[in-house]
Image (cartoon, rainbow, N blue to C red; front, side):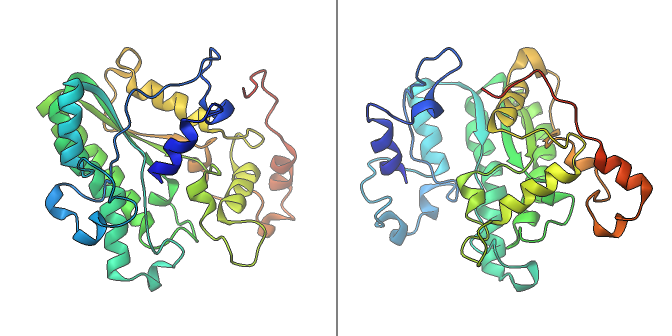
Amino acid sequence: MLPGFLKQLNTPEGYGKDQLLSNGTKMEFHKIYPLDLSFSNPAEVPEKTKSSKYYKDLTAGFDIKSVAEQVTKDYGKIDYFVHSVANGPEVTKPLLETSRAGYLAASSASAYSLVSAVQEFGPIMNPGGAVLSISYIATEKVVPGYGGGMSSAKAQLESDTRTLAFEAGRAYGVRVNSISAGPLKSRAASAIGRGLGSEKVHIDFTIDYMKANAPLSDTDLYAEDVGTSALGLLAPHISRAVTGTVLHVDNGMHIMGISLDSKAFDDSPTFKAFRAKKTPASDWTHP
């Protein structure tokens, strides 16, 4: 993936409008480190992985410990670490059909990777710095189709967020938080349920469900909504005293206990009235 990313990044057009900052200038990357969060240190990397087409041309270590050492050498201290990674090789399988290997792989890549990252990057973070991860509502509610142990892995991630907030706060003066993001049609999310005979994939149905049932029913959810919320949790002048929290950015979907669009309530006057109410339009427009 990295060679393809760099190849496109280094073209004159780059990533087009997706690479533009709010002031119209192009976002530049000072340095990009290949990092595979599945491996905590060089000893954990199998020879098969080292010789694969994705890694064989890398000249520096790509495990967490090696990258932390490279960052320390290049920059000394850092202020932020954003953990935005998840992988479940059996995510399309129900939990009842998930193998032990698939379950543990999801936990390793999606949850323990945060623990390992804080172990290595915590010591090189400035006091007042922040670690941020990305979670999902499947930690709290059942989301059919989000399988392979991924709901369990995200639950681990949120639990570890609280414990790490205490331990890293005492050890390094660093805050640790998480954002539980609503359904966004990212490339990773779009891969779940692809090729199962429907034009729509799992994330499309989830977005439709949110729009039908969330308190902010007619409000589209954008990556910028998650990004600006993340900025608030990272910036010390905004959230200096906030740590160990999971912030839901999902149009309020997480508070709902009953589906407004359930056919079971078709004849309910109360539900008919709520279905007719739409979220008033906002003056805010998406860039």
